[in-house]
Image (cartoon, rainbow, N blue to C red; front, side):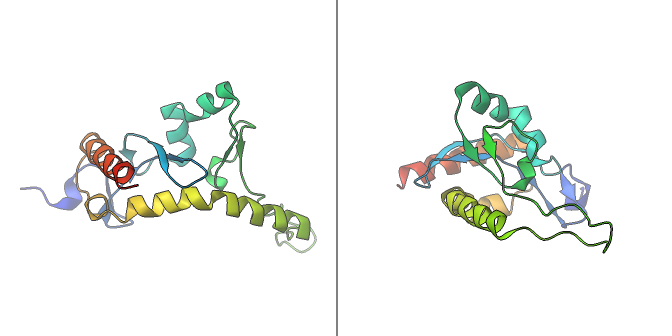
Length: 152
């Protein structure tokens, strides 16, 4: 019998199985859509493109707030300011201006409800202890989403 480390989607770095699930929440912090699961090694931007989220936001003209993993997406997806490039004189990153820090703080406040949905999703033990392929994980995520919506 194969051990957990021999199964697909096992991360040797994190010593567990992982899946990537994209979440869209409304401004009130309720889940609107949760994607089918992909292998955990998939980058967030790649997963969003694969599920068609980026194109859907652009086509609908809807503006969304996301973290820096979605840097380079369409203008409809707003991300926080990243640290500036390395200063040639000192070899260190240039600091953000006070104005850029205030913009980032406002951006973080807008992302709060969505992050609460992510945290609530991660509270489900069945999703933290998952040891199956993404197809099976997608069924579990859909069931959890239904329970989350029903409990509101």
